[in-house]
Amino acid sequence: MTQTVSEQLALERLARKHERHLKFARHSPREQRFLPFVEDSRIPEIRDAVIGAVAFFGLIGALATMPWWMP
Image (cartoon, rainbow, N blue to C red; front, side, top):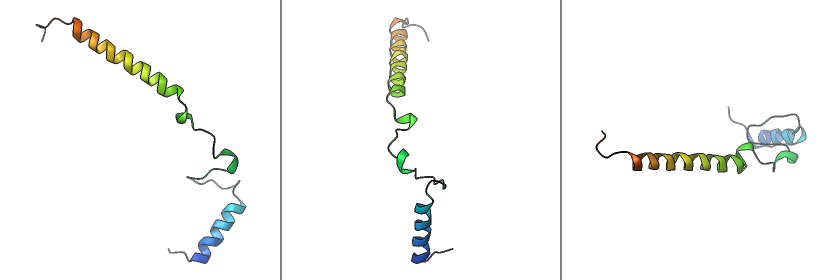
């Protein structure tokens, strides 16, 4: 189904008029547009980096202390 330009403009005007009541996948109300998402905060990144570093150095430590003749 193709829309004419006038139909598309009418739908956009209607969406702007009733912005608070409509839910769009890519759009937020004006008051919420600049709120950070949960995954945008730096706390989980730092926590994941620390967990990764501990796991990496644990693996290096295990390999360094492993006897060379073990299969």
